[in-house]
Length: 417
Ligand SMILES: Cc1ncc(COP(=O)(O)O)c(C=O)c1O
Image (cartoon, rainbow, N blue to C red):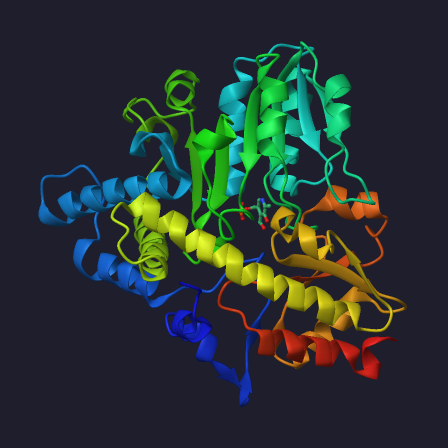
């Protein structure tokens, strides 16, 4: 059953907020999504009824442990993990990546090589660059084509060598929107016994994630990009999480996943994350009545989201292409929309992206300009230092009417300076 936008939108209270009578249009989704009632309810319920530290015999602490366990299970289902012990909660994707890179680095030797890419958000570049600096590792960069907006995978043969110990790649770009062939990269890196660390922050909100099918070793994401609270999540292969030397305090449990979950977690954030997965599960059960398992329902939800968002993305691309002087950087071929998420970056000839974005903000349209930390992307495209790019990112609660309003505002003569 296709997604019904008005039924979807009814779950999200913030979608009906008006400012000075003006309806808000949220196209800032790659920076952070809105949350459904289920997330708000889970968070309020946690504070109202279960708030405590974990590990005690009293009611609120027992409740907290139960909730943490349930949230690990829910995330394992969302990502297709083998079990809840493979799920690690942490402050955000960046902090988790710094922590894991440090722990992994204990096994790397001077002269080992790390592969990073020119398409990644800096959260999956700088932790590895700094590790390389500290340990005397060599760094290689996988470029992307400015014609196809895809990784230059034919470069892998020369870039992946017997000294490559890890590749850090992104599943979907937070700038170009490209969905990358992570499975192919993983095969190449595994062939030389290297590890693969995947940034899936921008993929998880848009399509079914299956870590087993990808074959990678680590995959990180952030709940606030998939309709949850500000919360980071890391999946890792069980034997790796068990064997890498985690930075942890002595009294903390050495069991999985706790050995990687340093300090007291954001229980309320994890409660909200559970709410986000429950929301998606509900969406999936409505899309495909009769599904039994949660993983099945989540896959059904994400499949329905893919179908709906591809339609929206085609509409957005057509609308943007009709704006005079506007140039899109990313896949625009309508037969290849399955190779991208609906995040679209562009420049308007003669216009400063910050000015364009202020005009959008004035019209109640929430969007971003700049580099959004995809520093290597704006550098490669030659826009770093000149305002970067405008970015509009859709979610499954956006509508055709909202896109039409965006195009109308962008087409007003004042959009060009
Ligand atoms: C692709 C990508 N990776 C990583 C991050 C950083 O995530 P976090 O804020 O959870 O550290 C972002 C945030 O925008 C992102 O878009």
